[in-house]
Every structure is written in structure tokens, then in C-alpha cells.
Image (cartoon, rainbow, N blue to C red):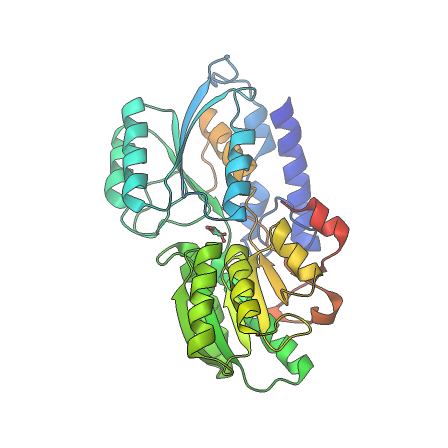
Length: 368
Ligand code: GYE
């Protein structure tokens, strides 16, 4: 019953989402996702079928989830989403492993799940390569793998992926910056980038997207160093940037909110002003609750969302597999771009006009 209602709701919100674009952190596919994927997945009818589905027969579905770690607010929300959806009450037995950003530990976790002979394995790949061997082992063991969030780029031996379009996020940040700088009469961009975990598809996509616009516009990217998606990492990199590039930069791009919190501390300590009323334009990604609070406080100039609430879509994939169906191979989450009215500007991505969302107390309260 619960699943049927959820499915119908998701199908309805997706149809609306495709037309409306922005809505504030809803579980919808990206506006740029192929329409086929958006309308077909998840399929409410398929999951409603009683069939010989083991959950319907009262059997618990066992799942192993190899999570990246606990490095950020985004990660906390992602973990909670999975634990809420794959709960005992919902008919699941979830083995959760926090891999603490260690790729070797993540491969070991997956191999342990194979040993345990779980029904499904969920992987959020810390880095995008090095997966084919262990995915072949999963395939040989007959255990379907669902990839969540970050992508696997050197193997296609998984049933489905549910996540965000990271390159689009980077392009959005770049196109927004172009439009905002024009509005403010800023003609020269000297940017410092604090990137995420090197080799993570979230890092690769955001870097590529932003770089593409920087190259097109002839911006100066002074440096790009990793803050590993953590607050401490962001602070350490920004401290060194404040020394090496004192007085030479007017844009800081942090690839997640937590890095941006750390960068704020470093800039405060160095006497650098930032945000809507400061000298430095501060751009962030994720747009979790605490990030949006910084937008509201005029400290982040804009925040580019990555929606961590993918677990209901993963459940749809699992229910489709349970009933013998074939899930969509790629399911995209919808992204929203957040700012205050002073920084809401018109921009397009590859010709598609974007709508920005104004950060209000209600928007913050609805976020994760
Ligand atoms: O942006 C960051 C987290 O993979 C999209 O990982 C995710 C990223 C997210 O640590 O906060």
C-alpha cells in the first residue's frame, strides 16, 4: 500500500517537475534528463503487482549498502534517506557500511556482501574507476548492484544508477557567475576552486562543467586543490590560498557546502570579505539546510543543489527487479539553483533557460 501510493505520487510529481522545473528539493529527475527515463521510471503499476515477489510473500529483502563515508551534511542526509526507506518496517534488512572515504575498504565491503549472499548491493562509489572486477564478482554471484549518487565509469555491470548530473551543476555555477558578474559590472574573474574528493564523479563533473564556462569566457582559474568534501579540508585549502593569492582573487568556488563553511572561517581569519556584500563571490554546491542558511545570511552568493534523497528511487528499482521487470538504467534527480533576489539572474545551460529559487525560511525548512 505504502509503495503504491509513493509510486503514484512520484510519477505525478515527475510529470509536474518536467514542466515546472523548480520546486525546492523534491525527488524528481533532472529537467535535462531524457524524457523517456523521467516518465518511465519508476513504474507504479509494476511495483503494485503482487507476483511472487519475496517482500509480498513476507520475506525480508536483504541489502548491503557500501556508503562513501560521513564527510558532509549531504552524506548524512543520503544515509538517513537509505536507512529510512530500507527499514525493517518496510520489509528490508539493511547492512550498512560507512567506508570512511577509503576505496580499498569499499571494495572489501562489497566482497563481504557477496559472502553474506545479500539479495541486492547498493554502492555509492567513492571514485569512479576500479570497479569492473568486483562488479563481475557480483554478477557471477547473481547479486544485482544498484549504483547511487556518484557514477561508475569503467564498468556497466550494474542494474541501475540513481543520481545527479554533476556536470550540469558545474555548468550552472559557471553560467550563473557569468550573468551575475555582468550584473555587478565585474569584468575580470580570478577564481580559486576548492574541489571535492579527487576522482569522485561529483568532483570530476563539477570541475568539468565550471571549467568549460571559464575557458569559453577567458576567466583566470588561479588554482584548484581538493578539500575532500570536508569542512576541515576546505578551511586548510583556503588558508593556504589566502596566503598564496592574497588580494588576487574575487571568486571562490567550493564543491560542497562543508568546504565552503571551512573556507568562510579561513577568509574571516584572513580578513577577506565574501558573499553578496563582500569582495569575493562565494559559490557552493549541495544546498543542504545549513548551506541555504548561509545563502539567506548573504554569505554564500549562490548554492547549486545536489539532491541526496535518492533512496525512494532505488527502492523503485529494487521493486521492479523483484517483480521480474527491467528498471531504467539511469534515473536523474532534479537540481535547483538557490540565491537571494539580489543574486537571482537569468541564465541558460546549453540553450535551456534556468529558473532560480529564492531562499526563504520556508525553503530552508523544507530542505534536508
Ligand atoms: O556533494 C558532497 C559529498 O557525492 C554528490 O559527496 C556527493 C558529494 C556531495 O561528500 O557533499
